[in-house]
Image (cartoon, rainbow, N blue to C red; front, side):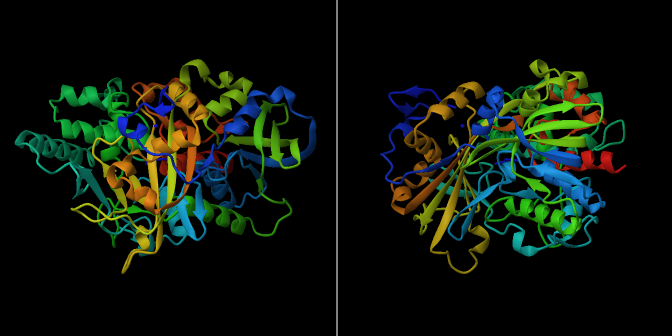
Length: 543
């Protein structure tokens, strides 16, 4: 649920851009984490695992503690179903995880949540339960807790050495560029309320509620770039913006992402609030980690005192097997004492893991109609890099520092200021700049190979490219620490044909001993989709 990088090595430096190779050696040693890499190697080498030394018996086992898994547990516990266990997986919270430099919090993944659409009733229910929506949760304009509604200045773009307000290029446009922008945004605005022949909204979030009208789903045959060209959109600034959106939202460029999904980004949400502008977003210093904390606290509270023990269990699912009586899951836990394995015996299981993991640990997946060689999504690698700043570097002329700061034609996706919501009167003495990179200039395989072998210095060079372009040496003058999170399989990317993926359709429809819940069911990673599939899996068990 990143929404907002790919390299070949030459002479020991990153070849993405000449600017990267000119960065001087870093005096700060980066802290680097690789969520899931060690556990992935354990799954690959599971033949060498020790024999199980423990057993958990439960009604429901939820495999994965990301947004989908915790949403399923939240929905179950709210309905009074307490006999379940969550096997946490390699990283509690998944792509919604966060970190801290002392008292300063920052995201290690997704950093905002749009105002929920009218169709996203599951998200509205959550937000109301957590006190984030304070009144009228299912009305057109709920009232939100103002402390988490993003305040201005919200975004800016660095162009030709100065800043402009907003991310869509608007300085020095030719009359043709301006006309094409106006035509494009007018068109996508008209799609927000349009409906297909089946009466559904053309583009809804969750995706499952969108129209299946063939007149519109045929857009999934083309890429965003092809669609733009076919419809007379040739503006370089508009092409850059759509490419940026696709990399930011889906982890790949506009020459690879489905045109249907490109339009879905603009037309699907449309959330409103009584006390915020249309299209506003909700954010916290540590991104979406507070949503993970809210879900966890609600699950614990709703279960109350019971005899089922701790619902959250450290460990990684290594093998899933259906039996006559239910499902058996072999789990691995790695600690300072070494490896141990244990068995979970459940009546039913919710696989809330990426499908690339499910396919590895569930040999009978093909019996559900899912062929791993054909139906596995394309996964995009990311870097999420958090720079602890002692003071704020001086700014170039133009719009002042914003929450989201993007470089026009930059190699990264810009950077977010973690303390933005706290800058009301004066800037705090320290802050965190969170830089995002979708490694989309080479194939995902090439990028993952580079990420696995890159030195800390090389990772820093890539992570800092946009920041160095803006601040030059001022970045290192203010930087005190750096935390880089390497996500080799960060998110699924919706390539053309994803809507007709029959393997995904089969897993979404499954209603047996094993259920499937993950943003991969939609082929793109955002909070609303992950939460939707988690809630849908829970409802199958409740009903």
